[in-house]
Image 1: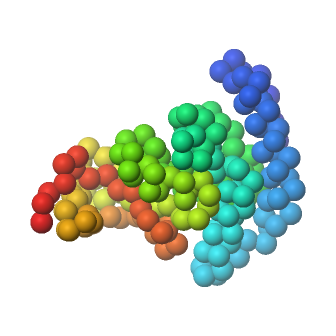
Image 2: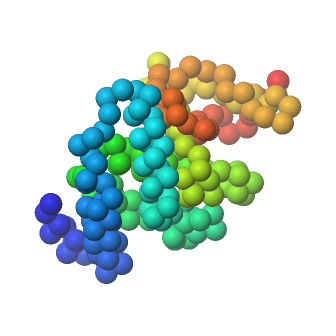
Image 3: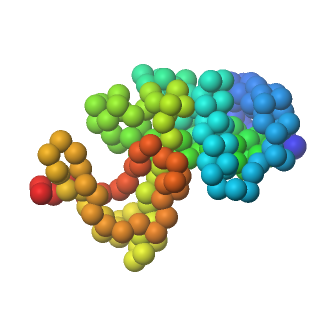
Length: 188
């Protein structure tokens, strides 16, 4: 794996250290079983859950959420996420998928969620206790967030999403999903 990019000026010594740590970890924890990834959907779901737990147990999911909720930094460091993903993907596409879907599902909450939402969802992402999903694409808008029509309707103490999604990454195994809705939910 060519790592000459680690000398680029927008990466610092902490990123070079991270790249070395994730490479050593992936070589021992991911590479030995990467060729054994099942094709059966039920088994695949189990492997994804197992990978999320392993990524959490060894602290890698802490890069997907801010420090107050189990993360390593006060905010999300995109360079760290890219370094981790590049190495995971080199060894196992499924490991990379398991990692990044936790980040994609929780990213909007990390960036724009209320304090209550952050406290309710982000610690479980870092701990690998819940699988996050990201409900983005719609039939008429694709992934153009501004053109989406899904809306949140308040129903008692919860929200009901009204709309149609084309793809919800991780939907089959997710414990919860993040979706873009209008900023002000509609009362039922």
